[in-house]
Length: 122
Image 1 (spheres, rainbow, N blue to C red):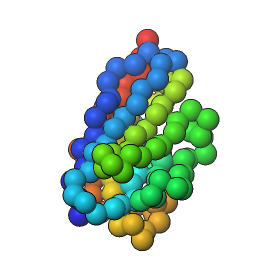
Image 2: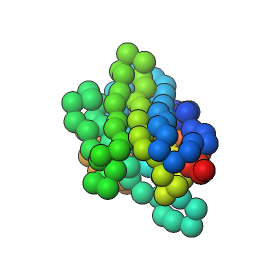
Image 3: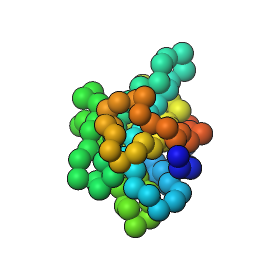
């Protein structure tokens, strides 16, 4: 397991952009992903990226507005969110899984952060 810490959440207005960051500890390589949980809803997969950054996955409804990247020299992944709307309001979690896992399999993530709140409101 690895420690992951999210940052970058906050209050945004509709149409704004935000970039979330997630820093992972240790020297091992991991696949990583972003999830979110809105009030009263189940946690949902948002985006995933493999250990090298060569493959990314985004939930289809967010592909046009969100992007996931990573900087392995900083052990950090990012979630760029554009054209935010109130439906994006949620607690956003970062998670890590072993490099031989499948980023689309939620059950393979074994390290989770505490989450960073994103609130989109006018």
